[in-house]
Every structure is written in C-alpha cells, then in structure tokens.
Amino acid sequence: MGRGKPERYMAVESCDKVKRNVFCRNYGECLDYTIRNKWPGFSCQNCECYEQERLEGEALSEDYARCIALAFVSGAVEIAQEMHG
Image (tube, rainbow, N blue to C red; front, side):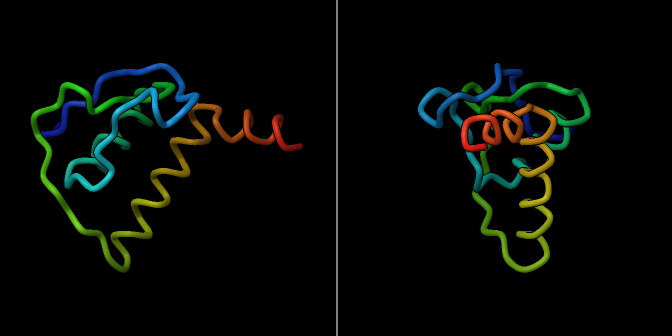
C-alpha cells in the first residue's frame, strides 16, 4: 500500500454514512486495495494523505472501472437490482 490509508467499512447504505475523498490522488489505489482485500466498503475518515487530483481522459475511465468493480465486490449492484428489479 502506498500513501493512502483506507479503513474497512461496512457496505455503504447511503452517501451520508461514509466519508470518501473521491478526488484524492490516492483514491484509485485505495479502491484497488479494498477490492483486493474483498472489503464491503471503505472510508477515508481518518486518512491524512489527501491530495487533490483532477482526472481526465483515460485516467478518468480507469477510475470509473475501479468504482464499478467495487460496486460488484461489495454487493451494491445486486442490492440495487433487487430494489429496482
């Protein structure tokens, strides 16, 4: 793990219940770490490694793919399908 320090967190039920710094340079790395460890979610609440980053082009697409992977690993996609299906 590099500089980011994600904390394991329960599956996210609402955006109000978890703090994430999605525009942090380390966010993608933290997503990867969360997915590799099969955590249901993570929080940036106590991380002191925030560095603002503006994603563009391919970097934005890669970050999007990581977010989708986390949604599948955490079960969020299945929950959404059950709620709307």
